[in-house]
Image (cartoon, rainbow, N blue to C red; front, top):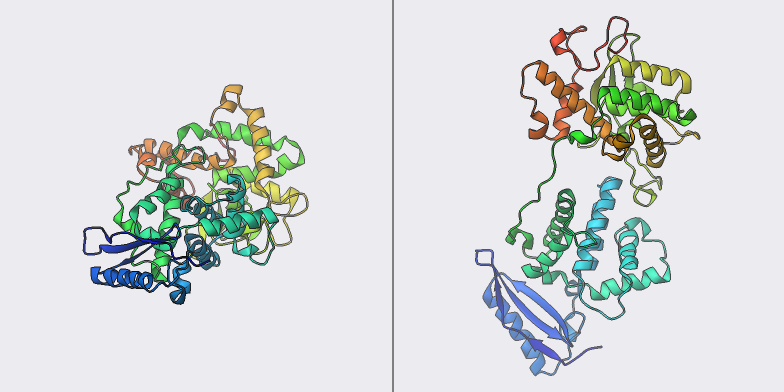
Amino acid sequence: MDSYDVRFWDIKKLGNSTAARHRVRWAVDGREHCKSFKARPLANGFLDGLKDAVRDRRPFNPRTGLPGAETTEGEMITWYVHARAYAEAKWGSLAPVSRRSVAQALVTVTIALSKKEPGAPDPKVLRQALFAWAFNPATRDTTPPPHITAALDWAERASLPVAYLEDTANVRLALAACAATLAGKPAAGSTQRRKRSVFYNALGYAVELGLLGSNPVDRIQWTAPAVAASVDRRVVVSPAQAGTLLTAAGRLGQRGAHLKAFFACLYYAALRPSEAVMLREADLHLPKTGWGRIVLSASASRAGRAWTDEGTARQERGLKHRADNETRTIPIPPVLVGLLRAHIKRFGTTLDGRVFQTARGGILQDSGYNEVWDEARREALTPAQYRSPLGRRPYAARGGVAVAELRGARHRGRAPRRARRRGPAEDLRPLHRRPSHRRQPAHRRGPWHTGRRGRPR
């Protein structure tokens, strides 16, 4: 309902540089509104127009803050509406896991940019409604349950207008939420960076649409949190421990025997689990003796059925951080060659050539191989080692390659500190080049060098 209760504030200058803007702030029936301009005369003219409408006894719309005859759709856009539009614009170009990460960040920011409004839903219900419905375009044609609908309606009413983000104080509210967990503790550095990146890009999209004059985050001083870039030696298993873990996994029934070669690919070839689940027989070069080769071409990270195009838990895509159809060639030691040859001979492959599969021929799932890996750790490690971070997740097996390279660096007289100066991915790259000679000198042999009979020393 329109209202005649209108209040004005003085024009405020935001920033001191040439990109400074002038904000007009007013309230209609207790609901605040603001709009910024590059030049002070423009701000004065807009404010004078609002005051003229008050003198003419024209009613104002509390939702838009404008006189009834001047209501425009652009002035109605709240952060909630803009965030939904941003999620939909990005959906098609993002991987399923990235879609979920964007939704998580938008949930955090949207709650932070909500004002007090009667009828607020339970915080858990609100997060569920925003994450699974508001910022998931795949649910646009699905009718949500009544309690989700009520939560979404409240979020739309309580959301601040995008124009309010011209005020850096409101931007800092969102950034502070990105830097904290639900319990109020500091979030991990990688989480802070990821959420801030999504927020920054969403504001950039608002600039692109003309909702903001410039990205307000650029006016805020912010120190990037430290993110661990080295291999944590506490989680890396040694070659002897890896062999014991693989043997223990192979003894855990039919499923364990099938996953033994899967875990070996993570350790000896440094494959990501998302890459190993999509490994096909055509990707393998497995000679009877000596080193082999894997030519990776696909991966499938688990994001959940709600975030993939086909409604499956995993969606096949290209390799991470690489262009479409780009491959990665990885030399593999004889011990892994033997394990893969034996695996294919015993279990075969799926119709599309995948080496690893479930009992029904489907793609391996995290819950399945994590359970087997945990049981293998319990069998192969001491109680103290089992309680420690040592090999706690299958993904940690990839660190064995970096440690092996460090050992090789010691033999070659190089500084064995490279893993601390470079990122984990860079530590793995040297071992993704095939050895130039069939038999290397003793001082250059890695921990997986084999003797004449192809048995690991």
